[in-house]
Amino acid sequence: NRKLTLTICFNYGGRAEIVDAVKQLQAEGVAVSEKAITQRLYDPDMPEVDLWVRTSGESRISNFLIWQAAYAEYVFQDKLWPDYDRRDLWAACEEYVHRNRRFGRA
Image 1 (cartoon, rainbow, N blue to C red):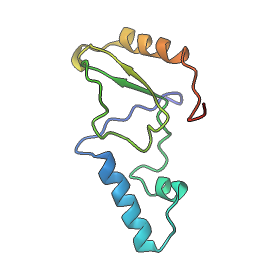
Image 2: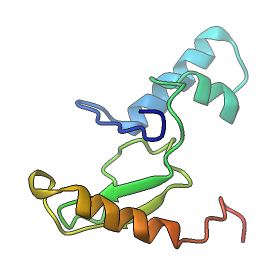
Image 3: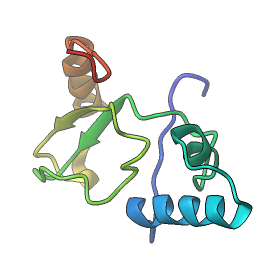
Image 4: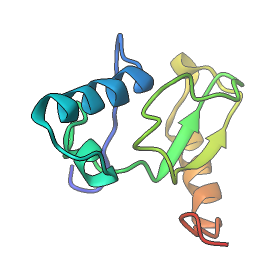
């Protein structure tokens, strides 16, 4: 699949990932920058998150990929994960394509 990246992490914390990257920079004596941190994340080649789908009616990201999802578009759905199907994903994608993505610009 060349068009979709699905990331599922177990026993993972976004804050810990950022702290580990900064510790690595300190150990290497490298100046801290966004690029330097990104290069030292657990999976530095993972693309940034475009669409973030949160199931089960929760309205939080739970410390998940907080660096990579800085400019993500969030869609919150009430459906529980075991019951989630392609129609739910399609609905999330439909909502996403109607968003005006500004990447931090006003």
